[in-house]
Image (cartoon, rainbow over all chains, first blue to last red; front, side, top):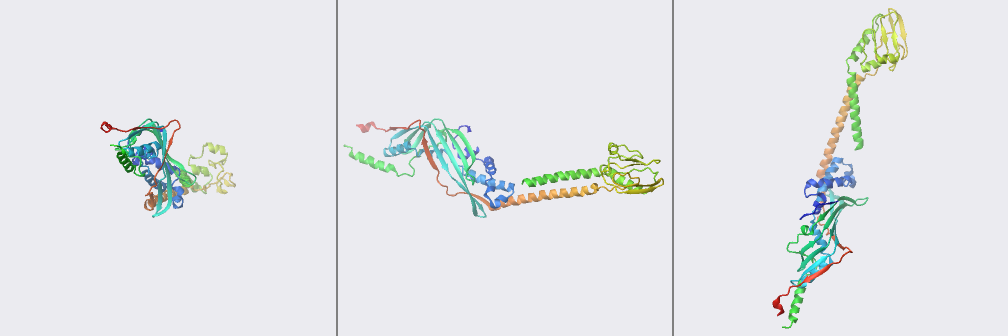
Length: 222
Length: 205
């Protein structure tokens, strides 16, 4: 199901639950309850009255919803950082100060996956770990990215969409708890600010570039 | 959970049925007829009397007026008795309720009847199951049982919820692993990169 266009500051929680308020936890709670996520843990939990299981499920839903506070823009940037064309452009612009590269990206798909967990403790002892899978799948049409000084400074794109899925590992196999898809406008959800570094975690090429530039200047005949 | 619901519903139905029986059997005609029957025991044969059968006792809908009875069930039962030469008519009703052998001695002679269908020519004390007496307490007991079940269930629910709130904790992983990202280019296009390098005019000179 595809709904309205996403706005700035959109998180996976808003995408999947509708809003960031606790009032919208019911959807997740119902999904957990329908699959017996708590009662199937076994032990004393399987002997609890349904109302008590619901109370436990409500708490689990609340904690799980906190795991969904993932900014969609950040997730997309994380994906874009792995785009070879952008990485090359970032390295190039780091070597040549003032160089600006416009990279036209073909249609692409960015998948972002995280596997958060929630521990269930009874009197401080962990008795079970709920393993979730949060997947965000961005479908982006042709986009133009401007890279300068190793940073993504501008992004223009065509239509796109994002699909979010939250699933839970269970004995019989993974179960899908939440699933939602909506259109996105990249420049609305990605907050670039003064530029998003594309080479984070990589060796600083700017110093090497400066040294190279200095060497070049030296070799230039006066 | 389902069996508890079934039991609760069953108890409600049984209680309702018992209350209904109790209400019906509480009709004032029942004790009156019983009283009348017992007062006629050993009466003379010419005395107009009415006897109640088991069915009469339980429904209380039978109406007695002197020496004549009219009732559909009465005729269909075929158990209508009349003592000739006397004003007394006896109604036994359907022989559904077993009646003990009875005999009376009146001024017109001695009569004896035996068997459940035998017409009593003497007064008979109704000896059917006293549902009116038993139904009330049973209904009360059932209601009390139902109330106890509901109350104890609520207490258990409250206790379980309290246990959950007190002992159960859900903790999200404090050191979440970094997400994995993957980018896939669609086969229908390629990326193009254009570089713009500024050159100051002054540098060219």
